[in-house]
Image (cartoon, rainbow, N blue to C red):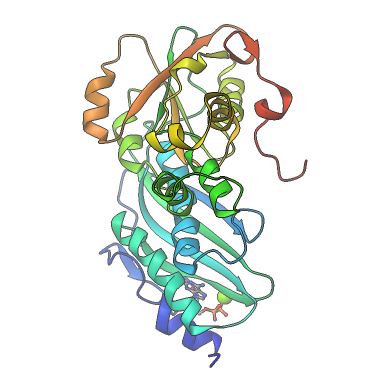
Length: 318
Ligand code: ADP
Ligand code: MG
């Protein structure tokens, strides 16, 4: 039985995520009241997910709840920020309590995991979209930016980019392989893991950082443009998961690693001589050197400028 907007909010969204002492007043009033830690810089980001555009229609509601926070957490990770509070603007075609319960549980789980409290939002009727606005903190001057890469820096990436795009192909029934090969890929698309811990350890060390949402090569292009440098990728260095080896031939895997989206891994540059093994241990996630920052502009893969369709990444208006 459908329920009303206010009941929906009260029942499923009013105590969602971590309980934090710095929330003076959360869901329920006209606005949230928060107590930012003195002396820290506030980091804000917002991201919307649209059914059919960012995830296939019919995806499990808990996965959608996970995703809408994960994509926002990933932006904070790329800045080296520690997440704290989130707002959620939801547009729903109908108020289905069962759907809402599962959506809220997926959202709650990842919010708790990262210490994020849901402090407010807005709920409206219409074609489904979910927007989170997230806030976090960083010590003054220590945020990671896209703009600090210098020629001679090494280009590094976390995880195994391409898996999520392959996982989307699995969900859409476009990739065929044994189930034990396909399952981890699907999981990477359904439950992206924002690299908050890695972002924190990269503070004061990485010269530039971006999260990969639209494809490695395209997002590297953005980092390079912001830094006023070029980037050379050696595709033989691209990390490949065991699942990917089983699911795709090397050329298809190379392409999807460079052009596929939705990884939410971090792509960053390290000055030469950085102790990457220590970083990896501190972050608890695998990182791989894939190339070099050079003088000039644009991204090259194995010496060739990246093809147009790879190099620009995903663009909603093209
Ligand atoms: P107003 O009309 O004053 O904007 P609303 O009726 O929209 O208030 O919201 C009532 C309370 O519920 C507010 O505290 C708001 O932040 C919260 N809220 C509304 N929608 C959501 C949502 N999707 N997620 C979290 N909190 C929400
Ligand atoms: Mg409102």
